Length: 178
Image (cartoon, rainbow, N blue to C red; front, side, top):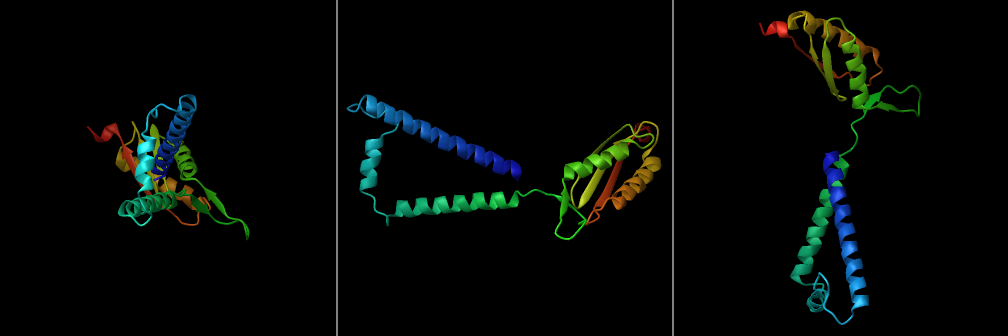
């Protein structure tokens, strides 16, 4: 969701910058040649159309509803796009400690890669779940998976996490493909 908020804010910023550049271009054109027609946008026609439109007209109400709905969508998207921190136990009162899921994944990944017969490993972590995907060329899944699960469980138990995440270990071994 954070990607959506970043994309929307970038698009909104580009739209505002484009509108500002267009306005500056039109003003400069009007100062340079006041008697000529507008350069890009038909401003006089828009001015005449808006002069005949009242605040209680249907088009103004539709535009107001559209702006309000788009504002609410942006507000909800930014509220949902919060950081997904992993809470650690507080060392003292009035002190709260968090870490990022990436840091937790890095700690678990370093620990898993240091195990015997682990060729490579990738780890994704959140406050609720830690997923380990390891590969080994020398051991089968039945041999390595229980050992890695026990090792990661011990590591997670040693960390001062408020909530113990679920642990999922998958081992990919060429020996299992034979």
